[in-house]
Length: 213
Image 1 (tube, rainbow, N blue to C red):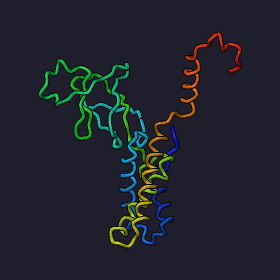
Image 2 (spheres, rainbow, N blue to C red):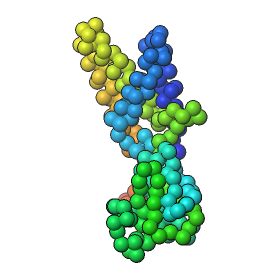
Image 3 (tube, rainbow, N blue to C red):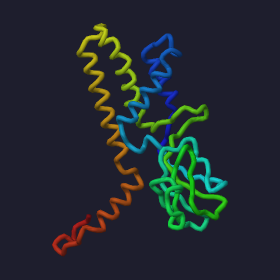
Image 4 (cartoon, rainbow, N blue to C red):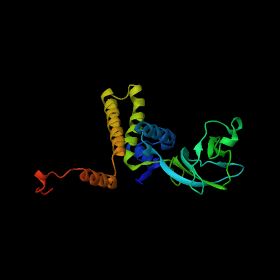
């Protein structure tokens, strides 16, 4: 798992860099802008994958509060359940074995005999204080987005020259693309495995068999 940092740390750094005196007034806005930046970067590195065991009562279980999207649902025998598109109340229950649907913070089953169920899901990671965390390599991009949005107020009020505003916008766009590109690059272990596979696919031609490759 790649290192993550609290969005609180990113916001605090921006407040220091801009020498903002009334930090409390801007803090929540900066946190919101940080999430805007993450959405614009637009990769799944914004979130993390988790697995938990849920206790079933009356054919339902409460979902984790940090859930973004369910990936898989299975029982203790590793039998996987499939999502159902509508309420079981309007369906033929006999045909709904190993089916589930999500509603109002709960996962519900039509027919289930297990007392526990396992789910893997995409989650929003948080720090010990409940603030969201972000990929460490997103820090520069998020910081510049917050500064760009903050200084845009001065630009719209004709207190900031257009060239400075445009420079900040271009730098945010550059760092956004860089963060997105880094997320899509293989990590070191993946690159090593790719290299092994790549080299194994290169045919050894007799003409080059004496070369020291």
